[in-house]
Image (cartoon, rainbow, N blue to C red; front, side, top):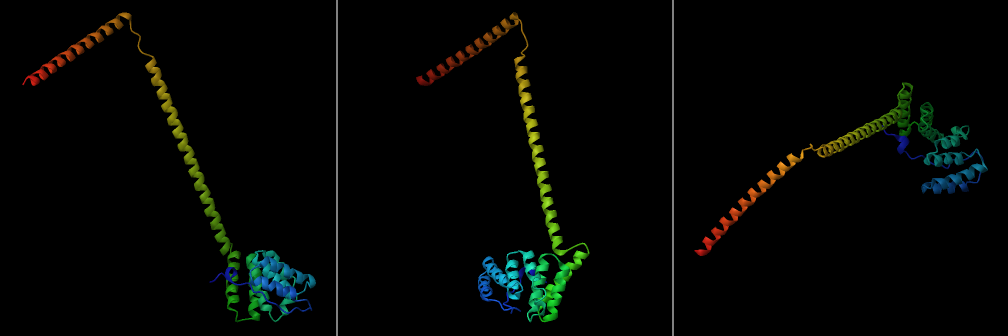
Amino acid sequence: MRRLIAILIFAVLCLPSMAQVDRHEVRAGNRKFNKKNYPAAEIDYRKAVLKDTSSVAGQYNLSSALYRQEDYQGAQNALDAIKDNAPVHRNASDYYYNAGDVALQNKDYAAAVEAFRQSLLRNPGDLDAKENYIYAKKMLENQQNGGGGQDNQDNQQNQDQQDNQDNQQNQDNQDQQDNQDQNNDQDQDNQDQQNDSQDQGRQPQISEQQAQQMLQAIQAQEKKTQDKVNKEKAALLQSKQKEKNW
């Protein structure tokens, strides 16, 4: 089923007014409306309404301009201003059709069902009105059963958004915990290094005699190493000499 409230063109009609008014403003508004300049069209329609508040054409088209600007309450007010005159007009089916669209946007599904029903009574061949009537009835049933098609979608979007927020919060908490663990590890490393430095600083104390013995041992080892190096140098020199004499 098509969501006609979102894709149907909200008709603009120059309906004959029950009073004699200057139609110049209405025609000017229609030209701007057709160019999708809805704010400018609204001004012209309001000028027509100022001349005659009961002007069906002025109020009906004003409602259309406000609807296109998503001012659904303003659109409803404009239709309400001609609710006594428009139903007896030859184009009353369009009036009720637009009234149904506005009611749907305001989620007044009961009013939408009745408006589309009235539109169909006056124009039974309007397929768009039939589809909107079926859609409005379904939305009303869902609403009465505690559901609501679009409401359920809104609730799902809100739930998804809450889930995303929860996931983000959990991630932030995990990151915070990881940072805390990293800081603890760094503190432990620093403490270990400090302990190592302290251990190095606490070398065992030795007597002067022990120190002298250690020095002598080191000197003896150095002498032994030096003698070995000298012998290796002498052997290498002899080897070179032999090679040279050949």
